[in-house]
Length: 106
Image 1 (cartoon, helix red, strand yellow):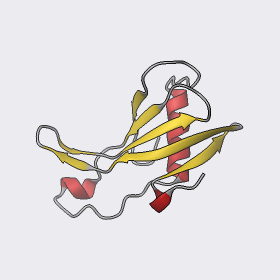
Image 2 (cartoon, rainbow, N blue to C red):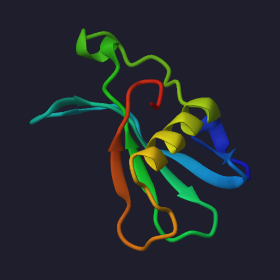
Image 3 (tube, rainbow, N blue to C red):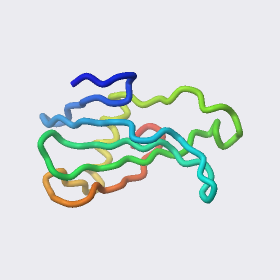
């Protein structure tokens, strides 16, 4: 699967393929302050997705410019494993489940 500009990809974990895609960049919220990026996950041909919420980068909290986002297949793989360990069942039905992860996807 081809994705432009590193905003998505596919990772394989335990013989299953998972697509990931960057949903939102870090953004400033008037009520909550800085919010981190979010990444969607979906196992191939399965109904239920997951969303990973990353913390806001420390540089934004210090008032520095955004800089470059660092999301790749390695971080996405860690996020898939963390979501599965936390109870995400891609074969079930329903709305995507949201999981908070650290900057490394754990």
